[in-house]
Every structure is written in structure tokens, then in C-alpha cells.
Image 1 (cartoon, one colour):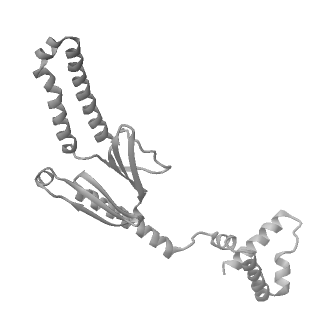
Image 2 (spheres, helix red, strand yellow):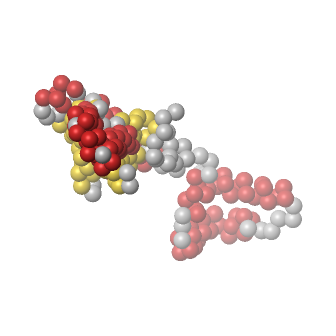
Image 3 (cartoon, rainbow, N blue to C red):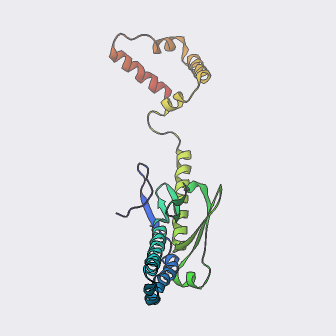
Length: 231
């Protein structure tokens, strides 16, 4: 399983993990490779200098190697992740510098992508812009940005549809009246009982709350109360 620097919540699953296009790291690595080769062109003059020439030669090799590893580390840990509950964008700027943006799909009101230039058009990468309630979030060098745009829109629409369905259905199950009763404050409960007492009359009201000597009587009285409330 691929490792990533994100801790998932309980029940959360990863749908897709996308890194910047490989061209994002190819050009810096090409420049670093040239830097790595330069000392070899001056190998003989540097070694003729003596110890300091050898130190300079080794230092340039170590510098080029370190810069190359740094670029690979940045590329490896810069990701955009889509999970079943949220989107996460990680921008690894350096070895000890990481920027993480995350949010719910409900916060996204528009998704735009842009492919501009020769190499982005040929290689199929571009910029993805998430327009959030807090402001735009732009992610560059995204491979296949149109696919991510469709996936984010689908996840956002599914989330809104689920919320709309819950609003229409309302409380369900046999215990809906218990949920409604528990949400009342003291004043609402008093008015609720007063209204019931007026409707059922004093005799039925007294029977509902008469002390029961046996457990079976208490169960029967509770069932009677449940049936009355569900009418």
C-alpha cells in the first residue's frame, strides 16, 4: 500500500492520490545533473591544486546530490488526495516546510482547471482551482486535471444529494418520538404534557402515571404510552 503523510479518520477511505506531473521535477533534475557533471570537466585542474581542489570537487558532487534528493522529496510528498469525506492538498516546499489545505466537498462551490502552454498541452497536465467559501485554492502541475474536476464535482453532488435526502426523510424508525421529546426544553415539555392531559382526560392521564407494582405492568403501560403517541 502506498504511504502518504495524511492520517485518515475512522471510516474514511482514500479514493485517489495524485502527485505533480513528472515534468515538474524533470527540469530541475536536469539542471542539477549538469551541476553534477561540471566538476568532472575540471577534474585534472582541481586535483592539481591539491587538498583544496579535492575538497571542492567532493563538495560540488555532494551539493548536486543533495539538491537532487531535495527535489525528489518535494515531488514525492506534494500530493492532492481525494477521500470519501474530504479533499487534501499538500505542498511540500522544503525538507521542513509543508503546507496542507483540506476541506469538505460541501465547501467547494466550483472547480476550474486550466491547461496553458505547449508542454502542458502535450503532456496533459494543468492547474486545478477549487473555489471555496474561504477563497480560491490553486494546485499546479496536476496530471489529467479534467478527471479530478469530474470526480470532485461528483463527490460534491453526492454529498448534497445525501443531505437533501436526509432533510426530506426526517427522523425515521420506531423511536422518532423519543428523539423529538429529548430535543425539547423544560417549557416545551410542560406544554406538551398539558396538551396531552387535556386531550386524554383526567382518568386516562392518571392511569398513565399510576405506580405499577409489577414489571409486566410497567412494560404494558409504556407500550400503551408509545401507541398513544404514535397515533
